[in-house]
Image (cartoon, rainbow, N blue to C red):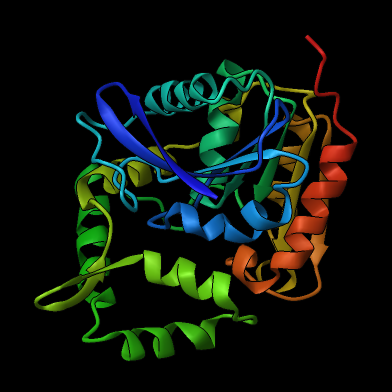
Amino acid sequence: MRTEWITSQGCRLRALVSGTGSRGIVCWPGTGLPAEEFLSLLHGLQSDFQVVALDPPGHGQSETWPNTWTWMDATRVTQDVLDHFDLERPLLVGHSLGGTTLLMVRPGVASAGLVLIDGGFPMAEPYPTYEAARASMDAWMAETQAEDWDTFLQAIKPDLNHWDADVEAGVRAMMRETTDGLVPRLDQRTIAAMLWNLSQFRLSDVESSDNPTLLLYGRDSQPDAEHIHRLHSRLFALRTSECPVGGHELLWDAPDWIVDQVTAFAAQLDWHRA
């Protein structure tokens, strides 16, 4: 595994990369999470694919976005990542907000298919203004701070059904050490803009598509049946699969299951179709 840096619209972005070759998988993590959220995929798929997991702007070690973040910016960043790694038609994999981001940018980015990991849904409590989203992020930052690693890790573990070295590495990458203790490694302004964009998300904004799409979710986080029906109406080639365990953090709750699902889905894709 290696670290590479990509510059998009003047913003320096970090990516974790494993494997080689023209068959690529590009991964966008969930809100506030770093590329390390996809360590299980980076390890599990590297023998057959080039897997690129991104620290989005304002996340992890990537720089903050210089302007107010928009869906168009997400399209530009995704295309710049594809150009950097010379990936013409990758499989796009996104968790939560990352999944919704890739769903929105897919019309402007050629891909072999899309995997949504508990993503592609509107916010349960949308923010009426950007300022409301920023206030929520500020509050979350204050609540998430911890005095030391033992305290932080013990607070995280009860929320997960699975714990291993990859999960711990991903959780540790969420935080940075300061003289005042541990604080989230993210930029509230950039992520508040992302949440504000998500708050405006409507399925009607997504072009109807027959591009293969797989929605994965855990039994503890079942999506609303009506929304699944609407998602099917927009994505004609949508498939769904429910994991018997886990919730929203499915990449950490059931990493082997995710690897198996993505591997099987990737085997069915037409990677070379123009």
